[in-house]
Image (cartoon, rainbow, N blue to C red):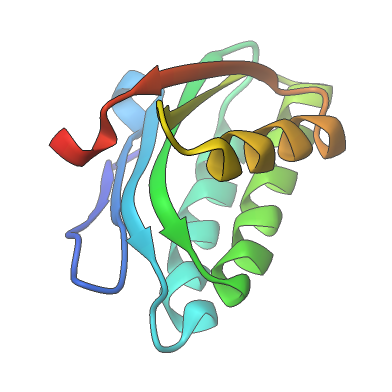
Length: 131
């Protein structure tokens, strides 16, 4: 499957889905004017990829430093797709990158892990300002 990339903007994250390497990354900030319009192609590409994988190790790198409530709703759909795949076909590691001083993003990650517990959760503290 062809890799999928969307460049970062001031209001939307970089989407770097390297399907060929089984490494998926979201980075930056997510508060697009229309979260549904932004995330629907991302969800569609992810869903197609996951349907084509079986017994695969997939790494999902979450590196968002800010996301609004509309984006959160779409992110939950994304995590749901990953979780469903982890329950049935693949091993999915959720690498949750968070700023060392941002407990809010870490706590959100822990909540995601509680809701989608088929994902292997790996919190990674870093200086995300450097990204």
